Structure formats: structure tokens, C-alpha cells
Length: 239
Image (cartoon, rainbow, N blue to C red; front, side, top):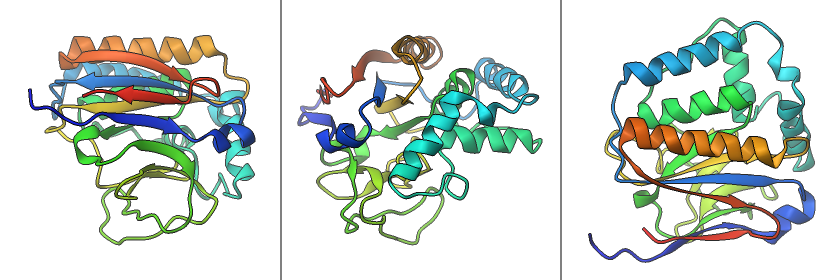
């Protein structure tokens, strides 16, 4: 294939100064076949939705830990819920989780099954490194499905392209950006599975590895995995 410059995933050390227990499982997906619909994945997702309907899973310690993390950077987790909480809220109101495409359905399934925030981005659309850090407020964000540009708040945790300063996700894991969204044309993606506080490493690794296996099976993708931690905060992704 064409030679592409190497990119890295970077979690800035300052994040770990404030959130020392944060860990990010990463699944790097190449050559994926991402379908508009897949009945096998759909049944997995529906099963996970049904299992999360009854109890008040929003009160689970893995989910509550994200409320606490969001408050630490002065965000209101009820108004701007972490993604896993937003999924659970939607289900508790009797809603389903729409099937966007195979990749998005798979990480939503894993998010619900393990109660961890999951998200992903199309690497081809990112010009610099994929960086998790604190916003200066100059970065640019267009929300998923929107076209109005806004700026994150200074001090907010954001996931952004360090070259274009476009934001892939605001408020850590609240809302994804339009520019890097995974579509049926996406061939290369980086998927994140985040844990903080009481979440054991084993759960993050189990969720990560199951997701990797599902990408191999249902998207015929080449997959590699990693874990980003305080001690290991940079990962080179040679695409």
C-alpha cells in the first residue's frame, strides 16, 4: 500500500496527574469491511440492550466513576453524560440503540456488555497524532451530525488531532466529532475502551480482546491491540 506517515496515540502526562487510575484499551483496525447492516452483530447488540433494560445500571460503580472524573474537570455528567451513561439512559427510557454500521454497533455492544465507554475514529481523516489532553479552548469541534463549529472549554478533557486541532471527542467521552466519524467507507480505525477508578485491568483487557476478535470475525479486519497507562502513555500506530 501507499506509504503513510506514522501517527501516535498520545495521552498527555497531565491527564495522569489528575486521573492516575485511567487506562485506555486500544483496538487498531485495518482493512475493515464495515457494513450498513449485519444481522449477527445486530442480535448481539439487541441482547446487550435487553440485558441492560431492567436494573439501574447507571448506579454501577464503573459508570459512577466516570461521573466523578467528569466533575474533576468541571463538567456536569448529568447534563453532558459520559457515553456509556448516555447509552444506559436511552435504554432505560425504553429506547433501542440504532445500528449505524458494523463497527459502531460492535463498540456499542462492548460498551453495554462491560459498562465501559467505547468510541472510535477513522484514522484516514486525522492528520496529526490522536491526543487525549486538556483543551486550550482554541480547538475546533463540530458535533456528530452537526455543522456548526464550536470551541471546547479551556481545561476540558478532549481527544483531538494535534495537527489540525480538530476535536474527535469533547468532554472525554461525551460527544463525538463529525470529521472523524466511522462510516461504511472507513478502512482504518482506532477504537478506545476506557476504564477508570474501580475498573480492574482484566475487565478492560477482556473487553478489548473480545472487541478485537469481533472485528476479525465480522469485519474481516486485521487487528492489533494495546493498553495505554500512566507508564505507557504513547503508542505508535504505523498504518
